[in-house]
Image (cartoon, rainbow, N blue to C red):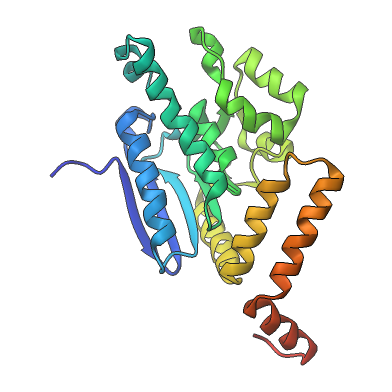
Length: 255
């Protein structure tokens, strides 16, 4: 049987997508990018899945970024364009998903791997993981990842990572806002599943509307953002889940 480059499984409301090229430190090639996009769509359509967790196989890396060997084989401009366009489409798709996403960073996240972490809503990492954009060392620049880095970190920290190529350890990444928390290896999966289950316990409708609103308003000016969010709030108040939640609160009972 052909090895699945992205494994898909669902348990207790959590769809786990595992990048499965441990021999290549889960580097992203065309096959993996297509498989990951397909797995995301599968999770979106899967009624059992309420939260999507993305992780990497093995213990060396979450994802080492783009597969340079794969890029090197694409010699024409159209081939290079299509290879990189797959990654751009994937990152953009993360922001449009109807379900929350959580990066379970089991090892180093570099280059495009860091892009995947930043594209997820939440991220938990093992303490020994490192995060960085080493592209400058091979004459490249983290151009698409930079769009997410800038939104998380602002100009100075983004440029420091991009211009130096130096990685930062997980505890520092948590302080910077790249990830939510860094935990010891023996507590890693408990932290991941605990956070995933907490998010999964809330109304899927509320999470979908709230998540969509967050990404939509991110680049709006304040006046437009408040107007847009006001309209979403009116819509949310009309949903059955919100009405049930408000009644339960007023009646001092659990839903």
